[in-house]
Length: 259
Image (cartoon, rainbow, N blue to C red; front, side, top):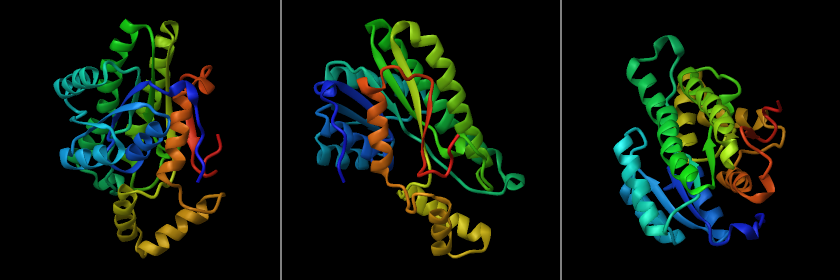
């Protein structure tokens, strides 16, 4: 697989939340190919340390649901990197259940991580970027931020909120030269998807293989998406090639959603 090269990113400094695995790890790897220094923030310190060692990044512990944890992690990132001017707010979770069977705990869990986590990380980084006069934010939303899916009503609602926040923040910070965009991945082959396939198979009365076959059948490009497919677009959005893009929710879905 070939990857785009953006020479202007060399020497830049980035924070990636949820960076230990899945899309987050792929973003870290894509940034390192651009010779960007990266602070990899994750709630799982062991996984973060392993990924950081393998990618030449700095590992930091974070719980994006808690303001004090985000403040501490970002202060450490500034100290270890000598500042940062790119945020990839990627940390996210999912659960699956029929909407009428959802519990308060599941609703709160998805919104606390997926929505409050975006709010806190964007606000805290955004304040730093505004004070420094530069910065770019890339949020991880989802195909589920564009169209709801059965058994994912709560997850979809949390990701729709991410897009609304992204658009509003982009308008507020545009005058400061700070761009804010979101990526909207589709059916990405990650550990999260592996869990979701098992849940969906049970909920739909199908085998896991049949669920995956259905995912591929829904995708005009004819395969499951990879984390690298998403990461390359995320890095593009942080580059000068996307200099006139802000407030966008960029679909990376293999054609499942085209609006």
